[in-house]
Each structure stands twice: as C-alpha cells, then as structure tokens.
Image 1 (cartoon, one colour):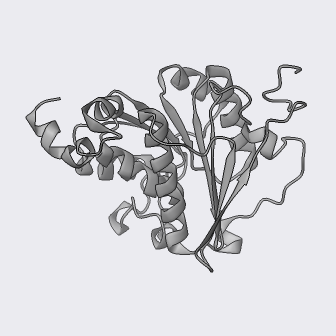
Image 2 (image 1 turned 90 degrees about the horizontal axis):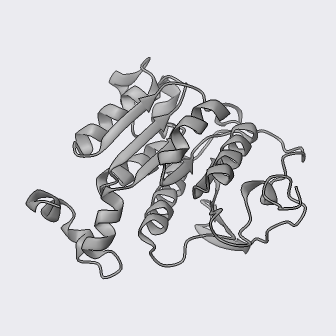
Length: 250
C-alpha cells in the first residue's frame, strides 16, 4: 500500500481485527456480484469503498424508473442504461482504485465457469431460485465462498455458503432444487426501500469477514430480518446428507 492507501483505509487499519494485513487481503480480492438491483446496489458500493481490488458486476437488466425507490447505485440519469454500466460509473466515482468489470448478461453456467476460477467471493444478489441454484452449483465446483441474500416485502435473509468448510451446508441443503417454492417478485409483492439496503449491507459485511477471516461469518446459519419489528433471528442449519448438490453420496 502507498501513502494514499494508508490514508484512505486508515479507519480499517485502526481495527485490530483488520489492520494492514487484512486491508491487503481486501485489496487483492476479487468479488463477483450477481445482480445489480436492490441488494447489489447496497453491497457493491461498500465493497468498493472498503478497497476490494476487483469487482465484477453481472446483470442483464436495464435501469427503470421503478428501480429508483430502492436501487441506490442508480440515478435518474441512468434510466435506460444497463444496470452494470450504471453501477460501474457509481463504483468508479466512489473508489477509482477498484477495478470494475461490467458484464451485461444473464448469469449462466458458462459465464460463471469463466469467471469463478479467479474469484475470492461471490455475492448472490438475484431474485429467483433457478439462478441461485446455478450460482450455488458453480461455487461448489470452484470452492468459492458464496454470500446469499434475499429480500421481499418487509422480510430479508442472509446466509454464507463456504464449500471449503467441512460439513457446511450449501444453498440446496436449505432450499432443495426439486422442492417447489412460490416465486415472488418486487413488481407484484412490493419491497420496503431500506430492506434491500440492510440485507445488501450485511452481505457486504459477510464478504469482508470471509475474505479477511474476521469473526464468525454466517456459515451454517440463516439470518432472518423482519423490518416491521426490527427483529433479527438466526436459524442454525445442517448439511443434508442426501443433498443432490453437495453430498459426497451424489
């Protein structure tokens, strides 16, 4: 780190749990963020500000007026632009030293196959089970930690999946791929504006904890946040022996 880095990240360096060594881990890390909407809008700026060296944004969507109620990475001037292009502009202004790569595509197995070998962490900021299972499978294959978040209405959740940790459950252990869940969308159910900020910020914090080996990330735990009551609950999770995604039996 040079003198400017020491000044920019001085408040991190002052923390005993981070220090210069931890900050250098952030600077050398590559975070892949799938989804540049509500959750990604909160998580990505904090990771860029924290000094993550490389961020790859993946999203096939464009900015719409209805997004601006909660997706704070985008502005009125960005309406009509790909979300990753708008996001790259915001993140680059926030921290010009972070490399930002924008991929205006829908996440696919082929796309993730080319990116994940260099990734330090993946943040799932998407809104559908099919894509979440696709990301989970790719992270399991490449042994890359995954921070999974979801938010709808007034309810949010976060968990950390780390394939490097023995007996840690994966996303499919919690939500089996062959189980039917009702897909709910913000466009039909609505979403409380600050909720995505809270959950996305927790995702960013968990990503930094995993990268910097700080404290106890939510591995094997599902954090639930109820914005109506400001109540947080944590459910302990177990690896499922018959999981079709991560069990050695399969």
